[in-house]
Length: 217
Image (tube, rainbow, N blue to C red; front, side, top):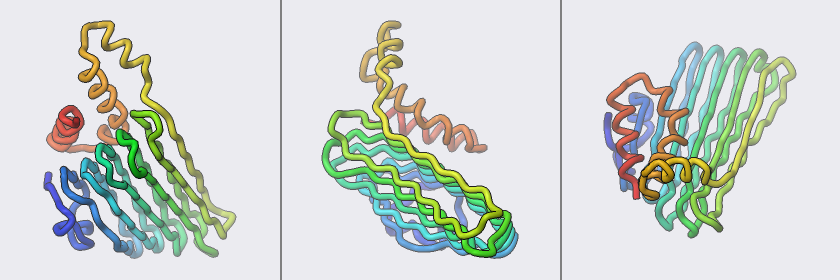
């Protein structure tokens, strides 16, 4: 597992590594990935940084495949803006985007933009884009915006978006069994990430991510 700051994270490292943890640094990125015929790529990003400005454009050619999983906590007064744009240029390409965020700040916004396009003649393609943000405080500003641009009929395309608040029933359940309230909130926070964390195959990386979640303020 490697820790990257905004100067170390670039298109070269993104093409080599497949899992990134950002801790107390800025996540600043604006670039593109091109997957040629039969190429595939899966990226995990766990973002605990103060400020995030992430813009990724993915171009998919024939039989290529791209999966993107992003999980973040907004715990500062700075913005977190994450935008991913995927273009299916040729047939039989697939993409899956899953983004999850916890907003713990009432200043500035947390925003997910996910745009998937399947162009004319790109038959038999499949795409799924979905995002969810849970607000941990009142008056948090959060936006989840999935967009599908479909020019071909013989494809599969779907999207999902959700905004919500922390489940107080889970907090009550834990505190009623002797867990202190702050620790209960941290445990519930970690549970929201489990869906993405459980997709990781490296047990050490799983432990690193969960350790960050438990130690978050």
